Each structure stands twice: as C-alpha cells, then as structure tokens.
Image (cartoon, rainbow, N blue to C red; front, top):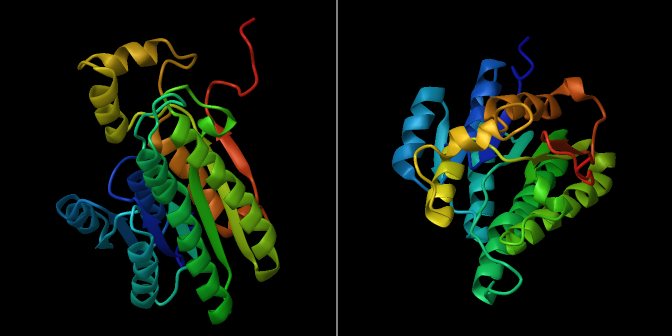
Length: 255
C-alpha cells in the first residue's frame, strides 16, 4: 500500500541506522519528496543517490543551521508535512563525571535543536495551511537509563516532554507529534559506540543478542514500520503518543 505517495518528508539524521531505515520505508511506500540530513557529506550523498532523494549536510549541534536546513528543505520540497528527528549524540557520562560542556552538547543536539526544528516545521505548516506529522526518535532511557547515560537520558527525557507538549499545543492545527522509545538497537552507530566506549570486540553483537529474550537486539527495519505508520494518514488522530519499542518492560522486576 502506497501510504506516502503525497508525503513531503525531512529526516534529520537519515544517512545510517534507524534514520536510513525510515527513509527506505517511506520510499518503499511511495514517498518521492524526501530530504535526508547528516554530518558526513560523502555518506549522505551516496545514500541520497540510492534513495533518489536530496541530502543536506547538517549538524544537530548547530541549532541555527538546522533550522535553516528546515527552510531550505521546505523550499525545495514545496512543503514539509512529515518530520523525523532520528539523529542524536550518545556520548557517555554519569552524574559523577559529566562536565558542563558535555551536558550542553547533549542537550543542544538531542533536545534544543529538535525543539526548534519542530517549531519551524509547525510554523510553516500553519502559515501555509496544511497538516503535518512529526516523529521524534527517543529511547527507553527516558524511564531512567544506565548510570553512564546520565546526560543522554536527561536529553531524551526532555525531548519526550517536548513531544507531548507540542502535541497538545499543535493538535488544533492538525499537526500530530509522536515519539518512539527505542530499546537497545543493532545499528552502525551502536557498533561504533560499543567499540569506542566499552572496548567491544567483533563478537559483541552475537553475545549481546544471545542474552536477549527474543534472541536479537531491536532492528531498525522493525521500528521504521512504526515510524512510517505514525507519519501516515492511517494513524488518524494519533498524537502525543510515546511508544516503548523494546523487549524489556519498563518498571518490571526479575521474577
């Protein structure tokens, strides 16, 4: 079913992992108006060629530049009626060793910039008189998070609140805002993180998946289906929803 034949989409962080999976899903469901962003121009250009989409180099650490990208993408596409915020910083830090600089960088990239990108998409949609849908990629860490993810958890929890607050504020304009709390996911970014921060070897994924209830980590293609649904008209009036997408249940204890 071609759910996205009329969708004009911008994916912030769409060159790898979940963002790329969502871009591929939208294309498979008919989206021909698509802009993806990322920091790596070489990788972005290659992905854009694969998808027959446009790539715009953008760093979520630069709020002003990202908002300018929203305007540039909207001008190129004609409008933006689907926004996905999939990029994020995942650097490590605990309550004992996080520096103010790390805190600020995480909050800017993971909460401040997504807020103002969403704001700009909403402003333009209201001004232009069309509906829109936004999906923020969050994380199960919004419920707490490991001790070494203190600033990351705080930034994603902030974005979770932004998601619901914006949904409340924008519903009368027919702009829907939803979020997905992803669990531990098998992505190139996670592979790099495990090697950089946790000394992982080439077999870390095999061992990690063997210890999971379903024998796998969360797969980007599975989450992409939910994101596509949230962005589509098939999800109707759904807004302000934060969906846990994981095999571990928040609040559960060992039995």
